[in-house]
Image (cartoon, helix red, strand yellow):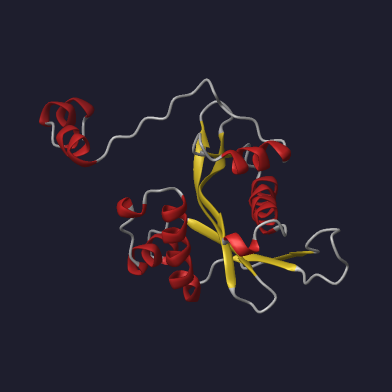
Length: 185
């Protein structure tokens, strides 16, 4: 479904162009890839970012696509922000939710409502589809984003600790024959 979400950019000035939020299209992959790298730079982790446009294209538009994206455009139709997400599932609620993997708006376009409009589009996806939640993570030091999320009514999940298994540890556990045999895989 390719819907455009348009709303005024805010009450700052009645002459502001509307914010356009829409589902990403294959033609947006290069812009999305560039935004991912800009976000990695902002998060001081540029060296860890290795995605290439072909991978992102497959993840978003391939036969087994499991990721989705919305983009924010400026008045000229240039992609200036993104929300890259995937569905998760709540065993307690018995329904899906959305996990927001990346939210990013170029610095020169911040403060004009693009980030809020992207999150509103995802919240609308949740409401329209009967999903119970919209979740994401934010770096502890990213106080501007934390303040922004709190202003929207988002609540931190401070009682949870995030774990990740990757690299050699992932390969070692994934290659553990005893685990594979015991799980019936």
